[in-house]
Amino acid sequence: MFDCHLDMRITEVLLKESYRWRFKELWKVKGLVYPLTVRMPTYVKERVDDDAIKVFKAEEMMKAEAKFPHWEPSVKDDPRMMDPKTYKDHADYNDDWIFEYSPHVRLVEGEKQALILTKSQSFSGLPSAVKRLLGTVKIPQQDLLMQRIIMQSNIWDPTKVKLPRRINTRLPGWKFKAEFGIPNYRIASTMVRNIVQLCAMGVPDMFNDRLTIYDPYLYSFFYYEGKHVAINAENDLMVCSRDPLPLLAQDTLVDESVNYNLPDIFPLSPTIDLHKQHVWRADNQPGWKTGYSFPHTHTLFVTYNDWWSTSQRNAKALMYCFGQTLAMAKQLYGFDVKILPKPISMHCVLTNGIQFHFTSFQLNTLATDSKDGIKNMVWFDSDNAMYNKILPQRAMLRNTTYENYNPNVLDKLLALYAYGK
Image (cartoon, rainbow, N blue to C red; front, side):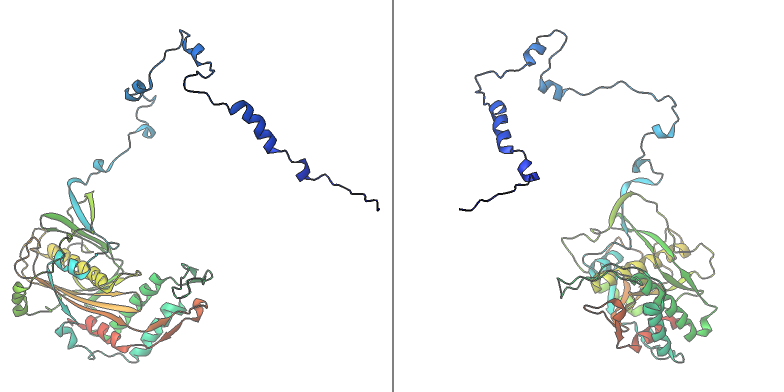
C-alpha cells in the first residue's frame, strides 16, 4: 500500500459561493403563495387610514386632464423660450399641395409615366436632322484624344477618397478590402467637362455663339390635371447658345401628333412618385436672368450613379428637357403663356462615364391639362457604351482593364454639339 499525499490549491472555483443554497434560503421567505381569499400582509392599510393621505381611484386619474399653471419666463423676448416654428409658419406656405420632381425621384413606370406628365410622343433613335451631321464634324486624332479623356477620368485623376466597399454577387463569401480611389460621380463629371471642350474644338466657328454654364439650377412650374407640379433640379453642365436651335420636327409631323394616344398606366397616377409638400412658390428659373446674352439651352449634360433601368433614366432626361424648355418659354413669352409662338428644341446627354443616353426634345404645347391636341416630341437613343470597364473579380481596383473603345459615341456627341451651327 502506497502513501499518497494530495496537495489541494484554493482556487476561485472552490471559493465560489453556492447559488443553489442561496436560492433555497430566499425561496423559504419570498416564495410564499397567498390565496385570493387571504389578505397579504402589508402596511398599506395603515397608511390609508391616515387622514393626511387622500385616496383616488386609478380610473379617475386616467380620465382627468393634467392642468398646470401658466408659466411666464422672466425675460419674455428670450429666443430660447419661443414656440417652435412649423411649416405652416413659412412665408411660402400654401394650402394646396404641390407635386415636385427632383433628381432623386425615380418614376416607377419610366418613359410611359414621363410621357404622360409632359404630354409627349416618343421616337426611337436620333432625329433625322441630327443624323445628317454624323461623320461631318472631324477633329484631328479625335479618337486618341477621347481615349486620353477616358484615362484622365478613370486613372490619371489624383483624387483619392475612400470608396464604398464592393460586393461581388458571383462570390457571396468574398470580402473586398477597403480601397481608395476616384469616386464614380467624379469620373463622370470630369469626363463630361473634357468632352464639352473636345466638342468645342471640333466646331470652332461656334466658339463665340456658345457658352458653358457649370452647375446650373432649374425650377419650372406647370399644371397637370389641375394639380400644381414643379421640376426642381441642379445639373452638371449646360451649353447655351445665342440663337434658338432649329426645329427637330417639321409642321406636318407636329400636326400628325394629334392622333397619338398617350400611354396608360392605370391604376397608377402619373404623380404617384412626386414629392408632395405645402411649402412652394410658383416661380420660374431656367438658370439665368432675363436679358442674358445666351438665353437658349442647347445641350444639357447630366451625370448619374444609380441602378435604375434604362426606361427610368430616359424618363429623367425627358423631365429635365421638358422643365428646361418650359422655363425658357415662360421667360421668353411670359409666365402665363398658353400658346407657343414657336416650338423650342434642345438636347440632353445622360451619362455615368461609360454609358451615354442621348435625348432630343421639342416643346410644341404647354396645354398639359388636356390629353387632346398636338403633343410634344422626344427622341431617345439609349445605352451607347463608349468603352467596357472590366472590374477585377478578386483583385484590387488598380487592376481594372478598359477595352472595346467605340468611336461612334463620340461622333454622336459631335453631331449633337454641331446641330444648329
